[in-house]
Every structure is written in structure tokens, then in C-alpha cells.
Image (cartoon, rainbow, N blue to C red; front, side, top):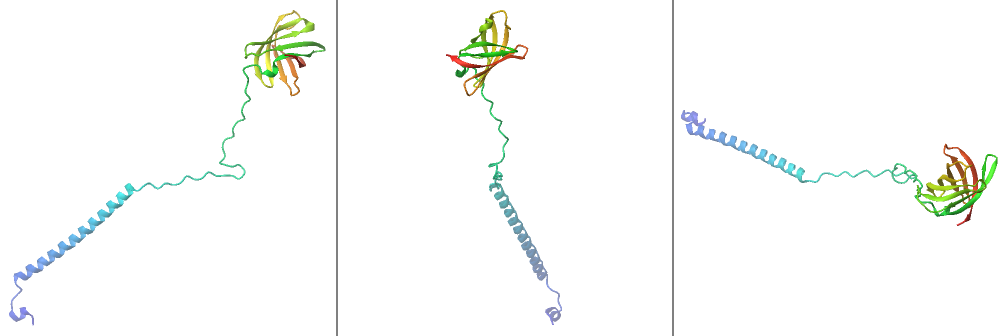
Length: 198
């Protein structure tokens, strides 16, 4: 038989108060535990954010260029072949006196050229068609180690074309191919010249 049964009295008010205080304390303790857990989680999240801000970004290496055994390093656009330089002055290999026989239609006659140094657009020599008694001045138009183009203007003689162009092509054996172009563009006279003086 319990005390209530023995005494016939209900529990006193202090017991109810003690029980209520126990419940309040238990509730506060649980709340403090939850708050502590949440605070720890917030600190851990903040630490993760700090590490993300201060950590260096991951560097991905650049892919190595593909190398072909046949072609070497990674293929590149083909480089165009260099254009042979055009000399602004008459090359030394053309300087001197050149003589030869020219053919025009069914006729042939002798020619003599005397070439000196000069720049494009300047007079660089003289020409004489001996049996025709015609002579003139030569002006350099273009020049390269392989050939020249000259403008011819006759200054004497009446039986020859007063103006035209002469193309000279140099060969390995030291001779020059002579081609005369009329001002309208047709080749009318050809021949081979050899060097006969300085």
C-alpha cells in the first residue's frame, strides 16, 4: 500500500512544482543541444566556404599538340615560296658590250648593245643596228639576275621603227637571247648575243 493509500492524502503541491521544473529543464537542455548542433554546422559550412575562396583554382593542363611521324609537329599552313627579288639596278653580269646577229623575217643583220649600270627608269645604254644605220638609247624597265627588259628609243636613222622594247635573257654559257617587241606587243626580231667588250 502506497503512502496515499496509507495516509489518505493527495500529493502535495511541491511535488507538482518539482515535476514541472524537471520538464522545463529537460526542454531547455534539448533546445541548447539543438542550438549547439546548428551552431557547429554553421561554423563548418563557413569553414568550407573559406577554404573554397582561398584554395587555388584547379588548373587543367593544355592538351599536347598531335605529332605525326611523317609530318613532324602539328600541321601548319603551307608557307608560300618566296618571290625572287627584282633588282632595282642593272646586274653586273649584263654590263659591257654585246654583239650578235638578229633575224627579222627572211633578213638578218648585226646589232651591238653597250650596257652600263643604272636604275629602273634611267638610261642604261645604247643600241646600234649597223647595216641599217639606226641607233638609239636604252632605258631600263625591269631587271633580275636572269633577264632585262629595256625600252628602246631610236635617235638616228629613218628606216627603223622609232620605239619598241627589248628583252634579254641570260644563259649559263654566258650568251644572251635577244627578243625585240614592237610597241603593240608582237615579237618581230630575235637573235643571240655574245659579250665582246667591257
